[in-house]
Length: 420
Image 1: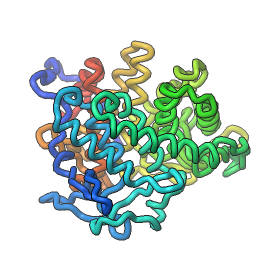
Image 2: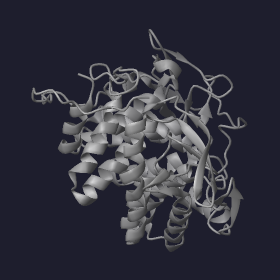
Image 3: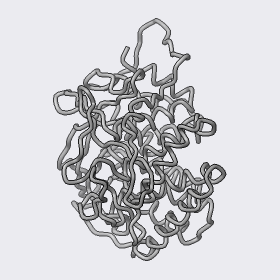
C-alpha cells in the first residue's frame, strides 16, 4: 500500500472559504421518527443505506437503528454551530436523546437495537443489556448533552440525569471494584479489569463519558475509576519509537484494530482531568510514532502481535476494511495534541489523516461528498469502494470534519493532502 504523499506542485493551495466541511444532508435523511409502545415520540437513524438510491435496510436479526449510532448522531447535532439557535437541530437532538432513554433497561445498561416492528431487541448478542459499547456511547451522549439541554428542556434534562445515575450505580456494582489482575496472551501482559476484560477501545469511550459526569458531580469513586481505566490502557501500549508497533495501544488482548482507536485521545483528556501529565506523555508517544508509521506504510484494519524478550512478531494482519471510523479517533487525538502543544506537526498529522475522506487514500476516491454529506462505507480489498452509506460512516465523517472546522491549521493541512 502506498503512502499518502504531500503535494509538491508550485501552485498555491486554494482552500474554499464560502462553504463548510460539514454537510448533514445525508444524516438528516437517515434520521427517522420512532414511536415507542408507551407512546413516547423519539427518533433513530437508519443503520444501513444501500447504493445507488440509498434505500434503507434492516440489519438481519438485529434491527434498523441502534443506541450505538443514535448516540453518535446526537453528538453531531449537539456539536453543530446551529444548536444554540436552530430549533430544528435542537428538536433532532432531543428526539435522539429520547430514543436513548427509552432503550435503557431496568438494570441500568442499555439495549442496543430496535426492530422495524417497534420492539426492542432484548436478546441479540449485539443488543443485550450488559456492560458494553452501546451503554458507554449512551453515557457519553447524555453527559455531554446535559449542560446544553439543561436550560432549554428541563423535563428532558431531569430524565437524562435519572438515566445517568442509574447506569453509574450499576457500574459501581459490576465494574469499579474489579481486581487489577493480568493474564499473559502471546507473551503480553493483558489487564482484566477493563470492559470485556482488556477492552481499551471501550475504556476510551467510557473515560470520555465519565469525565463529563465527574465534572458535574465530583464523584470521587468514579474519578478513581477513570484512573483505573487509564492505567489499563497504558498497560496495553506496546513497542517503542524504534520497534513495531511503535507505541500503539492494543485494542483487546493482543489485537489492534483501527475502529474505536480512541485511546490516545481519551488519555490526553484524562491526563488533564486527573492532573497527571504521564497519561498525556503516553498518548503523545502513539501520536508521534504510530500515526506517522500508518501514514507512511498504509492504513491498517487490524493486526495481532506476540512478544518475546522485547521482540514483537506480527501473527496476523489485515489492511481492510478501511473506514471513516478508523480515521476519526486518530484525528481527534492529533487535534487534541495540537491544541495542547500548539505544534504545527500535529495539525499536519490531523489534516493528513482526515484527507483520507477527501481522496488521499489507496482507492484515490473521495469517500465523503461535500455536496451531499454521503460518506461511503469502506475501502475493501483491491481498492474496491463500498458505495453504501450507512449511519456509522456518515456520522464518523461528520464528527471528524466538525472537529477540523475548529482548527484552521488542520483544515489547511487537510486541503494540502486531499486528492486534487
